[in-house]
Amino acid sequence: MTVKIFDTPEVQEFVKTVAGFDQSGGNDRAKQIVHRLVGDLFKLIDD
Image (tube, rainbow, N blue to C red; front, side):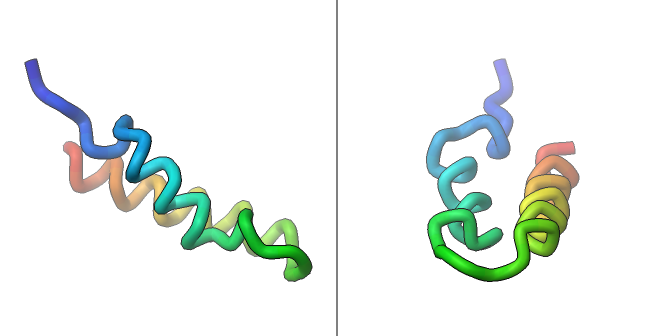
């Protein structure tokens, strides 16, 4: 059984932090885009 790095709670929290969801202010759309990009990068690493 392989463990996907993206599915770990630590990575999920890291991606949210990098995207800035834990910060007030900023552009919500930019946060969503960064979240998607970083998340997809981790999925690519898993593949």
